[in-house]
Image (cartoon, rainbow, N blue to C red; front, side):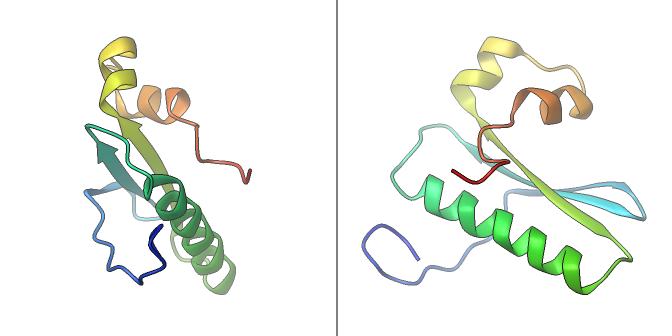
Length: 91
């Protein structure tokens, strides 16, 4: 649901398959909008839900904003995961 109260479709920017057992959903933004926190909250909940009902693959996510990406300039996906933790925990 977006900030206007409407239900929205969501298509992730990227899926990163680290292994047969671990997949990251990556959301990127050039400019943050009001819907980002709601979208990330729902994505976090989806990952929690899917990980509870199956154990074949662990799903996680990372939100990457352009300003921080340009500031920190990660050189690997592991660095990206370490740096971009903004939406990993519930607020």
